[in-house]
Each structure stands twice: as structure tokens, then as C-alpha cells.
Length: 274
Ligand SMILES: [Zn+2]
Ligand SMILES: [Zn+2]
View 1 (cartoon, rainbow, N blue to C red):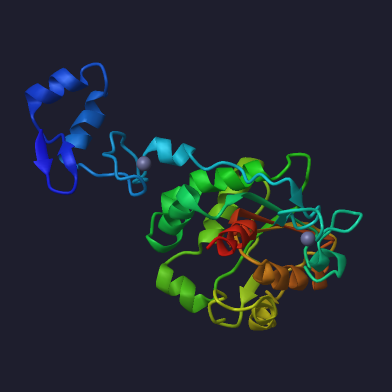
View 2 (view 1 turned 180 degrees about the horizontal axis):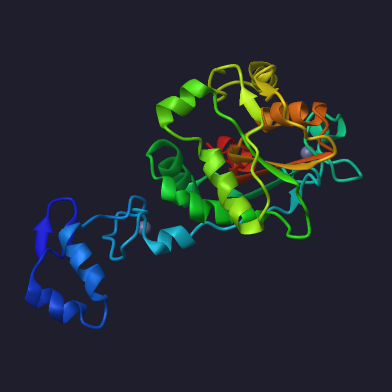
């Protein structure tokens, strides 16, 4: 055992120590792996003991919990602190005015804490194998009785996709499709390289993404029930613009599903505290 500054006590290769410690705790292959390729969980920093392509411990992977709210819009599922923004049918102003473009939304958790860290690793740090556990969370958020004909990933502009090497929403869509046996269709193109949405007001976000999407030539989605998959939902402006294009092309129903959504109740509460 060695002491590393900033890391603490950790196991390094020592056959006698490992033999005693690991005989009943770790299988031989994992013991060798830990000794040869020691690594820490990228979320909590604890040493990893399992062989996995995901550099996150199983405790952190199990940690995200489903979003819970007392009040939320029946259509877009936006959570609210009280029932006042909702009408008699339980809809928020955006849904009441028909501005969303989609029919319903399913999201698993809040975009914070461990779930936020996992999405960051998946989206910005090339940890593609996280598609499987994160895709499982998307699938869990969607009621099984709902049937879909086609799963469509939220497209990236080609320059962004080229720089990242993959489209994270496409990996999530494939994971949901694999579980349900529903085809994936990359039928939407992002034709406008939009500025980042962060920091823009609701109306500016809508303007920013207007005209950003086109249906690919030859795609026929008339009468189909479409599930549009994204990684994170913030105000829903991007999902809304994409859903509108799908509806205009003839989709009979467009549901949006994402791993997480920005819980603006938290922002409100936090900004309200001194
Ligand atoms: Zn961890
Ligand atoms: Zn709503």
C-alpha cells in the first residue's frame, strides 16, 4: 500500500497483500486489472475495483433518482413550485398557447449532482459507453404502454458532430431502440450552426433555433408516432423547433424524451436565498 499526495492510501501491485485482501473480495482478473490499471471513479474519486469501460463506480451509476414534483404541467412535465402557473387541465402557459410543438415530454431526473456529472462525461469527455446506463434511464422515464413507430435522435450540426466524433443523442436513441425493437431514423438534419442557448432568454432561444432543422429528402413519416430523443432539456426551445418540423412533415404524434431536465424550481429557490 502506498500513500499518494491528494489521493490517499491506495493499493498498488503487491502479490502478498493482494492475495490476502482479494482472495474472497475480488475475482483474479479484476485484482490484476486494479493492480495494473489503477483508476479512480471520475465522479466521486474513490478507487475503482471493477473492470469496466466506464470510469465510474457502480455506486455513482446507481445514484441518479427520478425527478419528483408536487406540481407539473400535464403535457410538458415542467415542474412548478405551486399550482398557480397551471390551468384547469393542468397545463402551463406554453402548452396552453400551443407553443411547444411536441405532444408530451418524458425526462428521467434533474440535471444536477451525479446525473449532471455523468452526462458531462458522456457528452464532453468521450465516455461513449455511458450510453447504455443513461439510455436505460431514458427508457425508464417513458411509460411502456406508449407505442412509437420511429425513434429520432436530436441532430447535431455536422461541424459539431465532426468535432465531437459522435452524436450523444444518437447513441441514447440506439440504446432505447435496442431495448424496444423500434427503428431509429436519422431523418432530421440540423442546417444551422446555432449559438449556444445558455444565457439566452426564452424568446431569444426560440429565435436562435428557428429554421435550424430540416427533414431529410425522401423521409416519409406521415401518420407516424415519433419519439424524439435528446440528452438534456432546458427550456425545451430546441426540442420544440425540431418537433414542429416533424409535425409539419406529417408525424401524428411527437413525444420528446431526455435523460435529464433543468429543474428551474431549484434556480428559483436558490436565487431567492441571500
Ligand atoms: Zn463513484
Ligand atoms: Zn407545459
